[in-house]
Image (cartoon, rainbow, N blue to C red; front, side):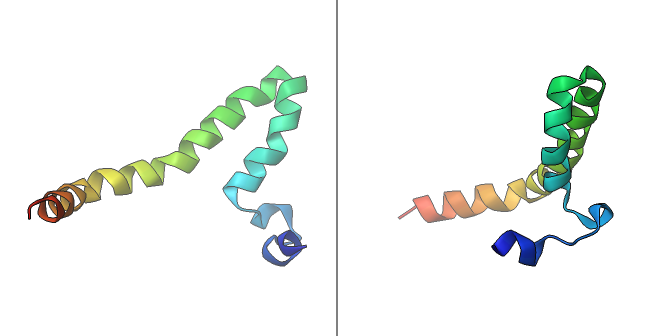
Length: 69
């Protein structure tokens, strides 16, 4: 029920994860969809990896500060 609230009606406005989920079943039937699903997954993870690499310095310093008593 909540998915109807958060998911727009237009397929062009769906979030990337939902689009990849909808492409996953055709990828099992038609192997031509498989590279699209893999590349889409990489594009979905790329911003998270970039943010992690940029903020890694702050994460390490906060962990080191919290461990010293």
